[in-house]
Length: 628
Ligand SMILES: O=C(O)c1ccc(O)c(O)c1
Ligand SMILES: [Mg+2]
Image: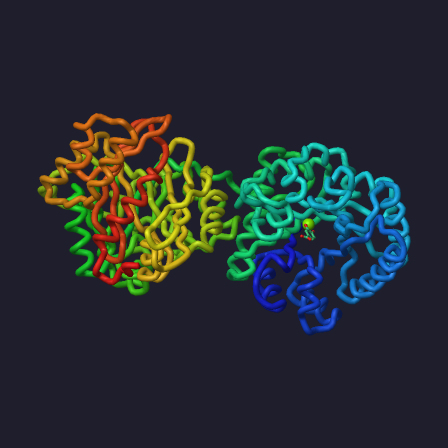
């Protein structure tokens, strides 16, 4: 497969864009005319710069309002096209994109448009150039690739072909199967973009909200399967107009783009193994059985504090690492590691971020396969230092500077606790009935959110839920969940746009994205709450007003409401069942634990978030939290 990306998709000046695009592994770029016009080098120099980066110019675009014009516009358009042909020759590209006419002056008529294209094909042929026609979703007469194809077909000229763009087809909900009967050699290039489903004007949606395949809600895989079925084997070119990307990091956005194309084609190849296009071979997305452990980097003082908090939560230190200052705390199926080592990644993470949960280990079927896939998708490999005889766990870097480990139950990986750890004598203390991880909540910079989503969904057999708004008294936090079918992996991503929200405060104080809370499951929240009380654990105090509302809203039994209130338990209910949640106060700069009981319920209590956040803020004040 050959990959390309339009220069409009990322931020930076032209030189920065080229460097980032080349580094991400693309083979080519589409030059958007305005990007070039704003740059102060000659077309020949630009072409040389592109080639010096090992890239080729796959397309020059867009040429607007060409077909079906009355005179004198028609003649002027042919002159204008000749000028752009000159430019293309200097840039060193043979393909121009003409998007369907939006001019109020333009005349309709398939044959009139076809005649214009035939004439242009003659002119292009003299210079060995090609012209592709694309239906804009908001074109005045042509806004459907089927009509654009009919025009190309009737133009009947070797140098005139069709350009498909997933956004224009999918935004208008045009049946993608209509693509399957188009001859592959008539498709000059395929542009790809996804977008979140938002009901808005097509042009505005397209110019501001496109994102990488897999990041949005459009059926880009179905579109691409139809394209691949034609036998098309040319460039796949990302054309992403997105306000956030234009202001984002050129290298991160380019890397996401490249990953999105590999992931997309892997999906297509799995669905249709016989496609002509070559796709890098890699293992399938990993099935996650559970979160095997979460590891904290701590210092001496905050380590002792965290230990007391864990003990009050019913965890016990059960083992000590053989060669590092790492202690394993366990309760039920939950493993937490406290790493106080003064060398290595944990220590570096501690120095930068302070005490933080910096690593997640996932239990998968085949850790090596999961790791291989991550590498094929461009993940950054992490190599840890291990003592003699200790287990090497396949690991990659997460988006925000943390780590993701892959464990499985085979060989040494399956015996990590025995091989790397010495058991500790059983300590006193009561367990409180925590059984397993429910979810891990990562607070991320809002503009990293899509990167995280793609990171997880491309590597792991997971899906993403629609985005919901969480209202913090100081702003909105956007929340989206990555979860698997069985619920054994649930990661909530909370994107903070300003530093005044609780999440934003956490990012500012933590110096970057990170895990802000960890939720555990219990089978009986009231028994757990009683045990917590006995352990001296203080739950986060929830406003009494909340309980009046819960009683009114759900019409639940006043006795139950009293019990909820007594233990500061939040309640939610939907068609699937009931949800109970309680929280710890914050630890450090806004980190906390949550305990939940699910009775059939599959959500995350989004409606309760506002009350939880207000309570956490009360708790965090006056330790530096803006009071708004
Ligand atoms: O928004 C536009 O005008 C525009 C231009 C060229 C394209 O290829 C496209 O998909 C959209
Ligand atoms: Mg396009």
